Image (cartoon, rainbow, N blue to C red):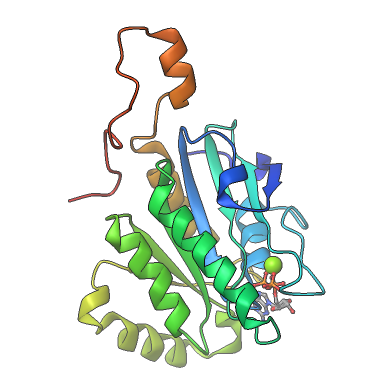
Length: 227
Ligand SMILES: Nc1nc2c(ncn2[C@@H]2O[C@H](COP(=O)(O)OP(=O)(O)OP(=O)(O)O)[C@@H](O)[C@H]2O)c(=O)[nH]1
Ligand SMILES: [Mg+2]
């Protein structure tokens, strides 16, 4: 099992173009603003403030990259979406940036969508799941703030979500970033995604090291979690 507690900050990227080299494997975290994305990330890595909780949501929209054992295995904190006070034009720009990231990032091995269990599966959440499924990437939906509901209410919510035929492949996990419940289960799933496949070298590197290879690298050799 990968050691999540040694996670460290790599960099903030203002757009997908400024991310680190597209190699190894990474898991992206998406979610509506205030769903508890930062709290969840911190709970998963067992650190109080690796992912900073912003007091001004929607202002800085950066993609934050965190390394696990090294830079070849990463957690990627995507900008939160759905913040009401953000101007429409700015929202559209993030939407485009997110779509580009999901479509183009070859090392992306799986997507975690964080939702408030009391308001699950909003339109933008569905969009994130769709982006992932378009590429046959595995999806884990963390139903965060489960501490706000009774066990019976949690069961009912999960039951209703599991009935959606189009989302049959989605894994639903009640979670509490505040209490740490769901952390071991989520770590197990992420560990599996991060260890299956992965791009062996940054494309630039493999070119330098092997003159016989053709310049345009083919699509991802193995698709984690597929079939
Ligand atoms: N009860 C409860 N509250 C939580 C939980 N997770 C987060 N919160 C609270 O929800 C609020 C938002 O949490 P953040 O982690 O900052 O949410 P975020 O999604 O990162 O928000 P932005 O970065 O602003 O988009 C904070 O007040 C947290 O304390 C949880 O599991 N249970
Ligand atoms: Mg946050």
